[in-house]
Structure formats: structure tokens, C-alpha cells
Amino acid sequence: MENFTPISAAIGGVLIGFAATLLMLFNGRVAGISGIVAACLNVRGHDIGWSAAFIAGLVLAPMTASLVGYSMPAPQMPDSWTIVVIAGALVGFGTRLGGGCTSGHGVCGMARLSARSIVATAIFMATAIIIVALSRHALGV
Amino acid sequence: MQMLAALACGLIFGWGLLISGMVEPTKVIGFLDIFGAWDPSLAVVMAAALGVSGVGFRLVAARQRPVFAAQSSWPTRTDVDAPLVIGAILFGVGWGLVGLCPGPALENLATLAPRVIAFVFAMACGMGLHRLWQGLRSEAAVRQPTESIVDG
Image (cartoon, rainbow over all chains, first blue to last red; front, side, top):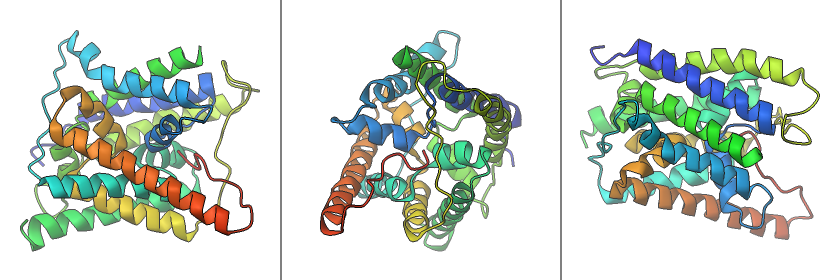
């Protein structure tokens, strides 16, 4: 557990929970990122304005954080292009079919003790753990 | 005002992902890799976020209406159905393969890393494919209520 960073994880988690609470307080919306992306892609919908603004905030966050000394290095993704594209498509399709992702189900839904969100979170976590176990240990890809 | 509020929430959410290290796919894989050098950080992020939003949602739910909107869109469904289960499995496969879920993927666009751009593009295509498929299905079936943001 040499990579465990409990303090920064707790601070970051508090900020995420705070952001989710504020979005509910101000706009009455669930801070589920996959849902927000879908709302932003729905060009004929009524939610394009605020969803685009939320995504803009997310993308601008590293830039504003760099003003106070937080740097964001380029992500390490050693995976092949094929894997990256397949994974992206699965995340997009899967989160819409299942109605949410790590934020919508994992944070917002579980905070409401929603049965759907608890089941979804348990399933996507278990699946991802199995995939990592298979790809990093069993198959050695 | 709704757009300004959403922008501020996106920024705070992004800072949370950044400070917690959840923007790094390797850190997320470290959590999912329970048979390797396990890093429980993601569980701490989730617990802290749940603690704050659990209390926060309770306080917000006591209000009549949101500050800048006519009404709150609290999810109402409670049934666990096949699409929920299958969708969660598909998402889990994609998440486990590269360690990116939608929030960190979008935030990583700021680095202009080509693989991140490809991931987000494929993600948008996956969502579009789901929309198309939903449209075809609801055309075929008798008018079913269209699904939008079901949970989040």
C-alpha cells in the first residue's frame, strides 16, 4: 500500500461531495458526469447550457488549480489505441444503458441510498476489478 | 445563473478529482488491482464524497425548490432491471481496461493527450449509439416514456 494517499483522497472526496451538493442546491440536478455529457450531446434538449458549463468547469479545473501550484501531468496510458477506443465506447454505451457512472451512481445515488445505484456501483466495481485481475495478472497483457 | 452555478460546480468537482489523484488512470487501476500493489485511495475519495453529499442532499431535499431552477430533478426509479445490470457490466469492462471513467476522462482533455481525446470521442460515440438504439426501440414498441438522465 505504498501508493496510498488517504489525506489528499479525503480532501478531494469532500470537494466532490460538496460540488454534487451545490449542483443539487442551485440547479436541482444530479452531478452524474455521464448524464451531463449525454445532456450536452443532446443538441435539441433543454439542458445543453448548464451541462456544457459544468463540463467547461471540469476541463478548466487543472488550469485554475495550477495557479495555486497543483500540476496535472499527462495521464499514463500504456494501452493500445484499439483498447482505448473499445474502452471509451463501452464506457459511453454502458453508462447510458445503466443510467450512470462512478459519480451519478457511485456518489450521488449511493448518497441517497438508492437501491439501483448501490447495485450498479457494486457491479461495475466488481467487473472492473475482474478485468484488471485478468488483464494485469492472468493474461499479462 | 444556472450556467454560472454549473461552471462553479464543475470547477470544484474537477479540483476534487485532481487533488485526490483520481484523474490519473494508474491511480484508479491501483485501486482496482486488488491482487497487485493495492491502493485504497479511491475508497477514501468515495467515502468522503458520500459523507458530504449524504448530509448535503438531506439538507437540500428539505428545501422547497432549488435556488436557480423551478424544481429539483431527483431520480425516482427504484427497480433493478436488466439494462441497469448489463450497463454496469459494460461500463465496468471499459473502466477496468484503461482506468478512465467519464469525469476524469473529460478533465484529462486539458492535457490534450491524444489517447484521452480518442477515449472521449469513442465515449461520445457509445452514448450516441445508445441514443440511436433507444430511438429505434421506442419506434418499434408502442410509445414508451423516453429515458433521459435516469440516475446521473
